[in-house]
Structures are given as structure tokens and as C-alpha cells.
Amino acid sequence: MAKAYDHLFKLLLIGDSGVGKTCLIIRFAEDNFTSTYISTIGIDFKIRTVDIDGKKIKLQVWDTAGQERFKTITTAYYRGAVGIILVYDITDAKSFENIQNWMKSIKENASAGVERLLIGNKCDMEAKRKVQRDEAEKLAKEHGIRFFETSAKSSVNVEEAFSTLARDILQKSSRKAAPSSNRPLLESSPPRKAGGKCSLV
Ligand SMILES: Nc1nc2c(ncn2[C@@H]2O[C@H](COP(=O)(O)OP(=O)(O)OP(=O)(O)O)[C@@H](O)[C@H]2O)c(=O)[nH]1
Image 1 (tube, protein in one colour):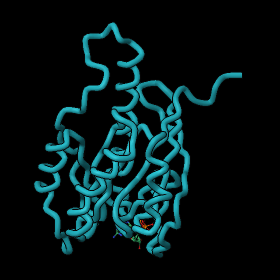
Image 2 (tube, rainbow, N blue to C red; image 1 turned 135 degrees about the vertical axis):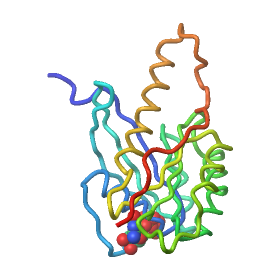
Image 3 (cartoon, protein in one colour; image 1 turned 45 degrees about the vertical axis):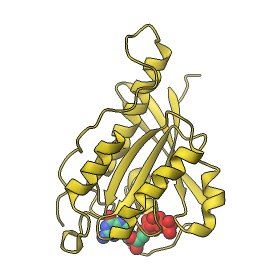
Image 4 (tube, protein in one colour; image 1 turned 60 degrees about the vertical axis):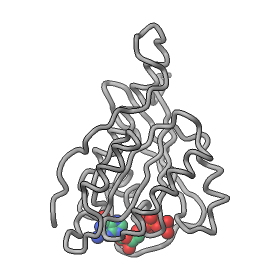
């Protein structure tokens, strides 16, 4: 029987409580949104298979609880992840400041060479914006990672963010599989600019 997918990638979303990690995953996996806030307890995951460059990629997307009290449980899940999405809320400056701590947490707990991506969520709330786009672009550049502003609510850039991460992981793994290529195996992503603009509701 033909395999239902070519690759299985385990992805993880991390970031402060309430930034919209669960909503981003629900938007990506089920194309749905709810404004009712139910804080994640511990950890959960959803699956979606996407087609990237002719390959079927099964994405197992793990949703971690942002609350400090679940930290011991959630950091245990970092290791097997090939991609980690760091999420802040553009209307919450503290959640952006904390990205530095989440970066540190990746360094301490994740596998070396894990692909990272930064998301500024809730970009539908422009009137309440506290984090400027260029600040976040600068941070992403410093870390050599991609950056997207998204809205799980209005479905802006969610698909793009997940598929870009999956594509980067796929390209990295095919470079690994073909060591004869001139590229280094574990090169970190060069600083890159974000995808499309966040539109307003
Ligand atoms: N306006 C707007 N609200 C959003 C968006 N994404 C999430 N929310 C709201 O923000 C609140 C928190 O969303 P969650 O997805 O539960 O946040 P979380 O990061 O998973 O939180 P924890 O599970 O506690 O870590 C909910 O009330 C959502 O409806 C968005 O893109 N725009």
C-alpha cells in the first residue's frame, strides 16, 4: 500500500499564555476560530498533511501551554521537534519581550539545528498594536529566522507561516540527505523578510 505521506515533521508552538497558539493551530488544522479563551493545560496536538514541492508532509503540530506552571511538562516536548514557532501578541509588549526567554528555552531544551520561526499574532487588532513590525523584524534578523505577522481570527498569513516552516525543514533535510551538495549541513537560516502584509478586518 502506498504511504500516506513522504515525511512526518513534529512542530511545536511556544509563547506566553493568551498570545493565540491554540487558535493558530486550529486555524491551520481545521480552518476555524473561536473567541472563547480556554487556556491549554499541559500539551496537545493536531495533525494536517500538506503538499510541499510535490511531497506529502504530515505535520504533527504540538500546542504547549504558555503558563509558567506547565513549563516542566512542555519543555520535555522540545527535543523531538524539527520546527518551533515562537508566538507573541502584537497588542502585548510583554509577550514580545519574553520572546528572548522563549529563545533561551529553545537553546536549553531543543535539538541543535531545530528550525525556528517568529510570529506576531492578532494583527487584525491594529488599533491596539504595541509591538512595531520593524522591532520584530530586527529581532528575527538577529536570530537569523523568518518572521510573519498573522491573524488566527481573520486567517492572515497562517497558512503561509506553517508552509514556509515546513518547506525550510524539508529543504534542510534534503540537504542532509545529499551531503555531496556544497551547502553546509546545519547552516542557520539567513535573515529573511516576512511574507505578505497583514490586512485589517
Ligand atoms: N483578535 C484576535 N484574537 C485572537 C487571535 N488569536 C487568538 N485570539 C484570542 O486570544 C485568546 C487566547 O487565544 P489562545 O489560542 O487560547 O491562546 P494560547 O496562546 O493558546 O494560550 P495558552 O493556552 O494559555 O498558552 C482567545 O480569546 C482567542 O480568541 C487573533 O488572531 N486575533
